Amino acid sequence: MSRRTLRPVFKRLWLLAPVATLGLGCSSTWSCEKDGLYPESFRIADIPSEDGGVSTADTACEELCRRAAYHGGPPCSFSRSSESLPEPDEVNCHVMYICEGRRPEGLCSDGAVATGTPALGALFARMAHLEAASVPAFERLADELASHGAPEHLVRAARRAAKDEVRHASAMESLARRHGAPMPELTVAPFQARSLEALAIENAVEGCVRETFGALLAGWQARSAEDAKVRESLGAIAPDELMHAELSWAIDAWAMERLSPEARERVESARREAWRDLEHDASTSHLPDEVARHSGLPSADLARRLVRELASELMPGALA
Image (cartoon, rainbow, N blue to C red; front, side, top):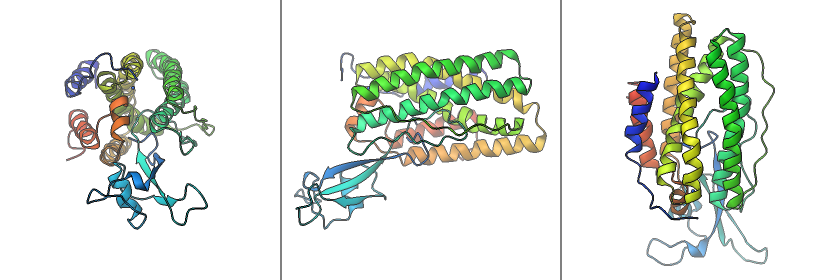
């Protein structure tokens, strides 16, 4: 995958993004983790019933969450805002966020923040967590590339990418704190030596699929977010992420030439599975309308369309 191929694909898909009106201030691709669900509580009385009246705790929590414009499936639960209340007056729903990027092997933390944190702040906190996790991912990648005899320009590019991610994490942390969320703690297990095939599989999944889609999302948000600060932050991040995606494909080309036919097929199989997983994550992602507008992230239907369009260009037949 060359720069001449990837960049035109991105530019074509970015044309689908709604451009935010300039001057609106207040900012994946989708879950930072595969099970990246964030809890949010609602007063049941604030959720309209089917007939336009007031909902009650007699309604299933899944249905109440669906009406609140969140993901309508489990997990969900009821709670009381006060122990003195005779019955539950709140429903606890979950929303899936998308903020794709390169996740290191051994990532133990999930970027979650405390229940009650504003949803927009929680989204940016997860994005900050994923950007921070990309720092050790690229540092390890650089060391492994060097140990496997990769060209020096690939090693240098991986080290530059790690430095880029430090800046990205700081920018996302600023947005998270601006919207009432702290920076989540990052925990990554110690790395172990691995084969070139194992490196190539992780790069195919985390780099050629998830980070590539994350780069597409960054450019999308830079165009669509109603929050001027988000547009500014993602506008600075998006070009770096595009270069990181290009690096992933350059590493893929180098590694595949050095693997056996059987190993190359295992890499391709992992890549196909990653596209399927990403499509599933996209189709089940849900954000409150206000969070989607300010962050600039696409709807679940549009996100799935973007995944399929990108996969059709980069790995035809993967989602046939």
